[in-house]
Length: 248
Image 1: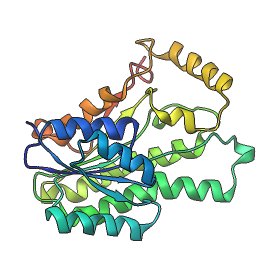
Image 2: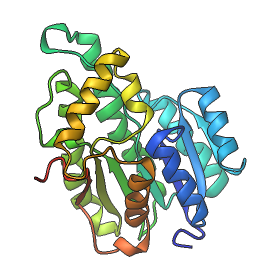
Image 3: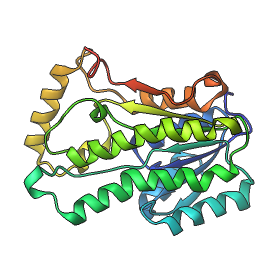
């Protein structure tokens, strides 16, 4: 039970990587706080977690929502041992079609939401606590139509280093897990038609050393390592889980 008696606060936990991590964390003994913006998906995720997670409907683009989620957690558990800042989304937008509103929304969700999740949870994290941020393989390669998402993920990778250094004197570790192409609902939400999505998936698969998309549970296992005391001497790092996509 690697997370016995620990409280884990997970954003973006209603599907994909976040939900698989929540299931694994719970199996390893953690008390869960699941944060999501969609009430129906949040309720469905709660059922998959045996009705034992604290479910908080919140939009991390709004600082007040993050503060409320943290306060509900403090009221129930008194502390947070693990933060998994996993929420994130985008749609494809080539250079010429990206609008001011599109850029602002992406930054609010994928960067400032992550920053303020860390800022607001940090006061409740004791020595030995762990913060995990989901970055992306887009940190290191250029992919058309995803420039703003890539920029926000590169920014969060930088946060892992800077906030890791800032929180190290308190004994709090800050690390990132960087997914490659993972079979999650994320790809179905980026705004491509099915035929175009299949073509993109086939093209990416050919570039992956292991010649397949990853599974969300494979990312969840990496997140568990970073959440647990197994990674007690790891901070500021980004663990890449991409089947070799950015390595070969």
